[in-house]
Image 1 (cartoon, rainbow, N blue to C red):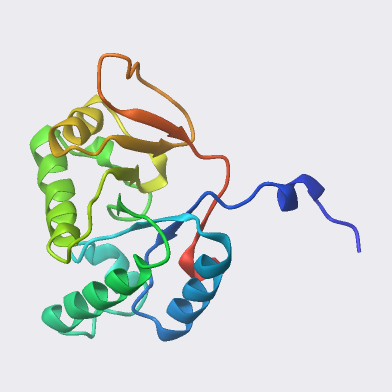
Image 2 (image 1 turned 120 degrees about the vertical axis):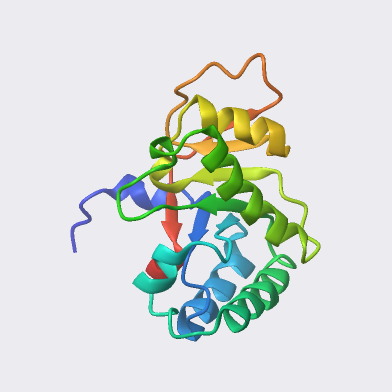
Length: 174
């Protein structure tokens, strides 16, 4: 068997974008993976309606959905560090939102995660698309580790550490 990119196997997964944790099969695979590899897990909050619909969790009552997320994120945090991840509708990014809208979306997600006792300092925007408003929002929210493929803005005057992501995966791809 010939590998299309043999180097791909040598680069460990740095982070997992957790978007379908309510699916029992995905959750089981995710737990097995993080116990061995211990990547950071960047998770969505309960206000990510696009992903909820896309992955079939829209039939759940809002409180049931939140409770599943709380229980599973809390359990997951025993094995790996948890950070915040956000999404908008397919192929739309935070850059489509002004500062106030970005702040609202990100602060709601962070507050949800902190409500279950998690300390959140890591952030990865959906599709790694971001702008200066995203950086300002991270600063205001105390999200000090910013994950992206490329460093688009000078962060030297901020207290934000840029984490260049070379390899990530989604929970549903495990």
